[in-house]
Image (cartoon, rainbow over the protein chains, first blue to last red):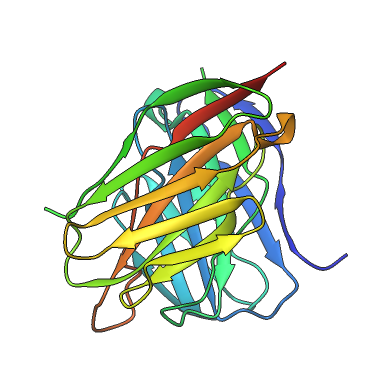
Length: 113
Length: 115
């Protein structure tokens, strides 16, 4: 089915472990984004990508790594997970123009113990 | 500092009643404002977008208003239904140069519609 998907939907990991969250979209949108959503905060941008092989930092990039070798995929890696990275992570995509909507995936709930 | 503040934080209303959610922003220079609905356990979905020249826009039972002079927006829900129970997020985009995403998200209003 067309759309934007994330995997896994739920993940529990231990402090210090590496974790990769996957994001896949079927619209061939140029732009893809990673956000985290925490209580008391609006969605905060971690990283974004304007096209394959082009990525840039957002508001809260520390502790995260991204890559985009293919237009449709935008994985997010926590190199050494910390408890402060416990959050719900959303991937989004859009064409990137000012009036374009960002389409969000269903989210990944990550717990770091 | 570019900020988006929403009120109330949460709201409980009876099914069939109307309600209005508020969004105040300091984002500048303003490009557009979008209201999203986020159901529990799902990603946000856009309800409507307001540009600088638009004062009112409706999408079914949802009506958004924008006063660009006072930097305020509201989302009015008419004849609420149980399915309206969700968080409503106000997102303001500022005019920018370059490729960086320039969205500022509010923390949302959590609406619960009860019988």
